[in-house]
Each structure stands twice: as C-alpha cells, then as structure tokens.
Length: 530
Image 1: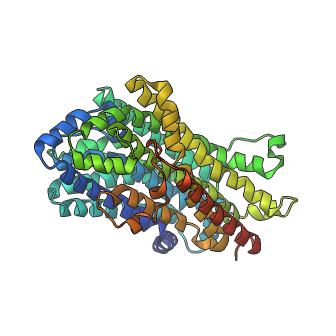
Image 2: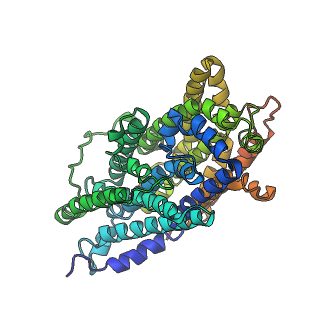
Image 3: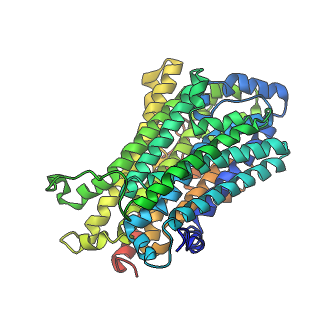
C-alpha cells in the first residue's frame, strides 16, 4: 500500500470539517490589506503627506517593532508595512490548523480509527499540509487581486500576497514537525507558538536595533525584505520555500518511524498522586487553562508596551489631516490624537481578548468531544460545577489579559510623555471598558455550545464580523445599523469626560442573558452529544 493512500479522502474530510473556519480566516486576512490601501489612498493622497507620515510614524521604533520596516512612501509601501502584523497572524492560523488535523486527531483517537482503513502512513500529515498550503496560496492570490483592484501595481501586489502566503506555508510546516514531537496537542501548540514567538523577536530585534542580519534569521523578517512596491526582490521568496522543504524532509521520516499516538520527545512523568489543588473541578480547569492564560497575558503585555510606545508618534502623524483625525476620534474617542490612537488600538486588543474568552468557553466542547467530560461527570461532580469551573476562565480571563494590556500601555505611554502615574489608571480604564463586549462574544459561544454544540465554532465567525466592522466600518462609512451588530461599537469612549456607564451595563446584561440561556440548554441536553 502506498504511504499516501487515502490522502484525497482525508483532504475532503478536512475541508468538510473546516468549511466555516478555513474560509473565515482566509477571507478575513485576505481582505484587510485592501482596506489598508484604500485608507492610505484616501487619507494620504499626496506624496508630501505620505512622506510626513513615514517621517513621523513609519520609522517610529515601536511601530517598526510591531509592523516591520517601511520601504518608501508610496501607497503600496505604506500598505505593505501596515499589513506586516498580518504575517504573524497568518503564521499562527496555519500552525494551529495543521496541528489540529494531525496531533489533535491522534490524541482524540480518530487517527487510529481511520488508520484501520486503507490509509497510508503519510496520508494524515500530507492532507493537513496540502489543505493549509492551498489555503495560504488562495489567501495570497486574494490579497494580490484585492490590492490590484485598488489601483496598486500588479507586481507589487503579487509580491506582497506571495510573501504573506509563504509565511503561512513555513509555519504550517513547523506545525507538521511539532506535531511529531509530543504526545499531546497542547505540547505541540506550545512548541510551535514558541518558535513563532522567537521568529517575531528576531525580526523585531533586527528591524529596531539596526542588526539587519537578525531579521534574515526569521521567516517573519523575509516578508518585508521582498520589498513589495519598492523594487521587488523576488529571490527572497525562495527562502521560505527552501525552509519549508527542509522542515518537511525532517517531519516525514519522524512521522513514519514513531508509534501512532507517541511523540519523538518522551512524556514527562507526573506525580504519583494528585495534589489537593486537583481535588475539585476548578483545580482541574486551572490546570487546563493556566498555560493559555499565561501565554495570552505575556503576549498582551508585550503588545501593550509596543502600542504605548508608538502612541505619541502616531498622534503626530495625523496632525493637520482633519478627515483622519475625525475617524481616529470616532474610533478611539479622545480629543488628543495620541489618545485617540490608543483608544482605537485598545479597542482592537479588546477583540483579541474576546478571542480568548471564546477559546476558554469552547474548551468545554473540546473536553466533551474528547470523551473526558463524561467520566468526570460520572463522579460526584455536578454538571453545574463543571461548567462553572470553565466559565471562570471564559469570563475572568478577558479581564486579566485586558488589565495587563492596559497597565503596560499606560506605563509605556506615560513614560513617553513623562506622566506614568496619570496614564496608568486612564489606560487601564480604556482597556477594561472592552470587557463587557468581550463577555458578549464569550456568552454567545456558551449559548451555541448549549443549544447547537455542533455549531459552537460559529462564535469565531461572530468575532470575525466584529473585526471587519471595527477595522473598515468607519473608514467605509457603513450604515450605523450594520456597525451596531458589533458589541464593541457600543463600548463607551471612557477618555471623554462625559462618558456614561449605561452601555457597559447593557452589554453585561446581554452577556449574562446569553450565558444563562446557554447553560439552561446545556443542562437539558445529553452529554456527550450523539
């Protein structure tokens, strides 16, 4: 039997299972660069305005750390820099997609069941990589077509689209390799995300500390060096292709030699007896969620430091541009442009925190489908206590990560303006104002899990809609009723002196209604679902 036997059928299975999630992140990440190009063309129509932007913001160390370097002052060059952070997101999405369809399948026992049929040894890994590679290629072509449609040069559009897509290809292959290393999907994700983080740090250090050679060590550093819209260097695209081939050459032999369900790295033995912390469902939930909570908190802290450090320069970049100042004030809600920038960016951080809330809420679904919830509930643990233990992290987790982001943003911004004691509580307030909106999306995830568990993943689609409305809604002047679909539209502008708490109370009440309705439905349905 061929080692690739059954690959085509597994590809169809993956496409079936990811028929919502896969198109979601491809379309979302593929459309955003087009909105960036449209915004730059509208707000910086002249070369002088774009040169001022580059001088004031494009070369700011904090912004370069977050987005990457800028090569020139054309609309295309500014768009390529603005979309630099998307490469990190594309890499993360590709990494997690491959691990979900390889190591997670083994951990859940589904890979062994499929292996009892006519299925080659390499079919699982090949199918996961093929689907993810194709998704990234489609994303790159969609991005290139969208940028070309805005009037940007076709060559630069294609260079940018391919550079972003190949970042996804690299980290998809990283996911394929890390899936061979550990027995648990969580361990594979941890190693993969660590590799992604190291790549980001290398790119950051190389771009901000004038050590260009460090950026060449990172796949995230190769994308800007394609120099889209600034004299394209097509040969750089060969680097991610070569690295992907090298990683695949390592991953496939390991996949063939290891036992099914085992990893290359031996598992660490745990204690012979459980500690008192694991005596109840809350302790178990803490054990399951603590790694993710710590990782998100560290990431939000670093992001807050970068955003706070870039605020002053971002405010100066829109001075004299009345239209952009109006949009920024509408997004962030502050009279000072730097504070409007902080309000807008912390609003986006709130969307990311909602992602954590959804992830934590859907952990119940993962425990159920993996068969771990049923034996736990067969003991003296009630369903209410089990659910409550996970809801603690779905509701308190966003508060924690947003508080970390707010404090770090306030510290960095306060240091730049010489007012740390004054800015810390203000930025903390801006960040925590996003919590009720994040709770609404977490409550929606609980509602879907309770009522329609098979469609619980649709909560991610709701988050994607909120991201789209938040990123391009104000710029495109969409109808207010459409903007109101996002709970983040109703978050009050707490940097204004006349803000009121009524929207926060209304959002909190809506989140409570969604959560309690979902819990009521969960108590009435069978667990696990048929």
